[in-house]
Length: 168
Image 1 (cartoon, rainbow, N blue to C red):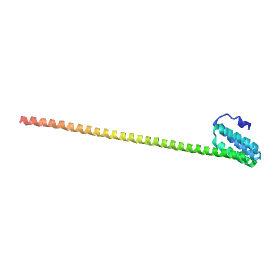
Image 2: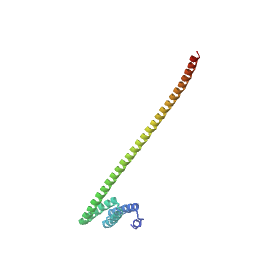
Image 3: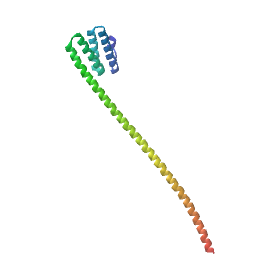
Image 4: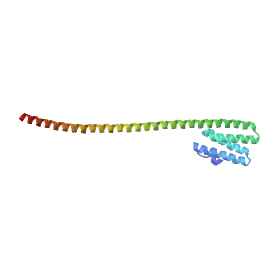
């Protein structure tokens, strides 16, 4: 018990301390020392309240209520049973909220992935259109060069024929 109380402060150590006090309380109860078990469990509940370790509080209050029932102290048992229900409901609400947050995060990530895929597809289409446009321009340039060369030959040939016709 003294070792547990001297753990450094923090959420991880609070969870460790809560679990340690709960197991210490269970051991005391197995030996029939319900009063000592309840003291250990109350320390677990106190640490759980201080550091918001809801699952520890749920278990501690449930065990305290059952031990008070075994001792015949039904008013105290009822008080801790109500604390147990409140803590259990708070834990359930917390888990639901976490689940909803995870779903929202997952949906946001899915939307981001979808936007990235659309962006990549758009970029690929633009690249393809650019390549096709460059290809068409190249074909037009080659065709124009061939036409221009043939037109030059035709003009020379016509000029030669005109000179022959004039000289005759």
